[in-house]
Length: 248
Image (tube, rainbow, N blue to C red; front, side, top):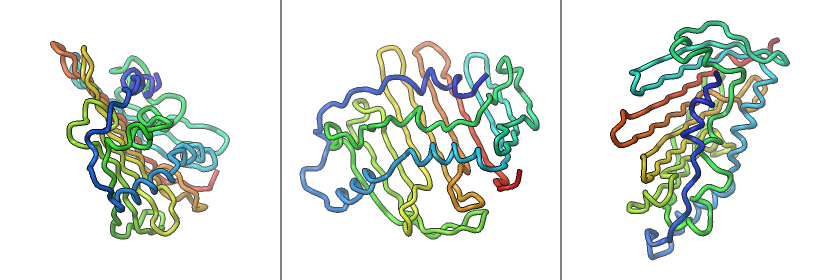
C-alpha cells in the first residue's frame, strides 16, 4: 500500500477560497515587498526535480509511517535501496502488518505537491494582503557531503484573524544566499469545516548529490483530522536519504 494513498484523503482536500484583505497593514513595507518578490521568483518544482533526479544515483532511504486513530498507535519502518535504472528494492521492513500490507509503496514520492498548490494563496493577488512577508539570513550551514552555504530564509505567514479564511497558514523557503538555489520548503496548513477540523505540515530539505545537483535529504509530512465526537486521527510520514552516490 502506498504511503501517499494513506495520506491523500486528508492532504488532497480542496483549498478554501480567499476572503478579503482586511488583515494587511495599512502602510507599505519595502522589506515585505522585497520578501514577496523573492518568494514569487522561487520555483517549488525544484523539489520535485530533486526527487526525479534520484533515478540517476544509488541511494538508501529509510521510511517511517506512524498512525494514531481509534485503533491506537501503529508504526511501520522500511529501508529501501535505489539503483540507477533499477528502481528501489526493500532492504528491511517491520510493522507492515499493522497497515494491512507493505507500507513503503513502489516509489519514493515527493509529498509537497499534496499540500502546496500551483498558485498558493500567499502569491495570489486576491489574497496576498492576508499574509505578512519576512526574509532573513541564517548562519552558514555545512552538509554531510562537504558542501556549505549561507541560508536566506523567506517566509509568508498568515495575519492573525485570517486563519479560518486561508488553509495555508505559513510557508517558509530556504534559499542558498550565494546562488539562489532552493534548498528547502516548509508548509503548514489548517482549515475548519462544518464536520471536522483538518491540519497538516510538510517539510522537505535538499542536499547536493555527488555531482552537485540537488537531491532530497529529508522529508516529513504530518496530517491530523479532528471530527467532533471521534478520536483525533494523525498520520506522520518521514523519509531520510543516506549514502547518495554515483555508483551502480
